[in-house]
Length: 365
Image 1 (cartoon, rainbow, N blue to C red):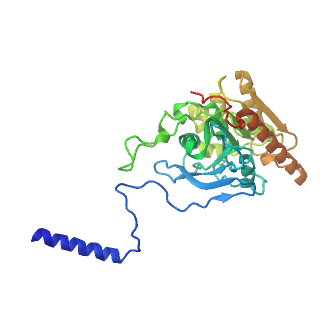
Image 2 (image 1 turned 90 degrees about the horizontal axis):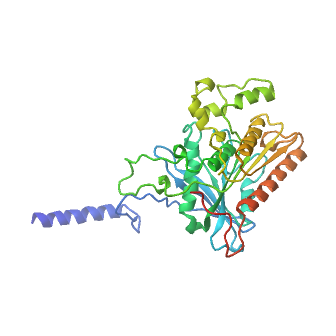
């Protein structure tokens, strides 16, 4: 009798609960659900490129979920047997602000990325933790997490995992170049506490060293490459001291100038990791940059030259940061030249293969 009474009560309670809920009832899984089921609002550009915005690629413990916008070639572009090469775009903003939808004076930057995708590339424009959210090396780890996520999902999105290139501007130029030269550097790999995860879920494969974060090329527009020399270069180029209290590089590192340890400054400097095995790189800068010393780019080019790394250096005379010129015409000319040179470099470095073939070499081990 007692058992029967319990069953009757349980059914009665269930019926009461069901009466308060919509029909059909929400589906409930047997374990914690980690997938994001918010409806996707995919976009198709005029050239047929399909974009899937705000895809979560990593959820570092204690921080917001990190997302990327994915641009997929139009269906009219025949997919190579190995898949399309992938370009990872990294926005600027002093590591403090910015997003992948805006870049310098380009009025519609998503359309620019779509135009690159239309040439036969998967393009991923990624978000990363800003310096007020987390200090270095979080940003470098985020970029590498995105690269690994793209490789883990290569089949799903038609990506050739052996052909990846990073492209960044300003602070994003620093991160793009850092990713290009820091292949297999343990200190910069995405990390997650191994002793904690949501019950019922599997370990995060992005943190696995079985997935490569190496890339086959890098492009940096007006980037930062050496934290140890940037302040002196700023004084020399602008004949004025850099304000150490607000300079974005110190906000990134979480210390002020001489308070930063040499080890931390070296760890955040791209030039630290350069060696002869690094992939080809394109460096572009305006000679009148008043935000990031243009000498930073020249120093990086010299470092690559000394290591025997294939690279291209393009200086734009009379052009400031964000490739802003003294006139609207000069600004337009500089940005279009930079974009044309970048697209050409990407084509030469990881360029879309003929249908049924694959080019660009293997993933660096």
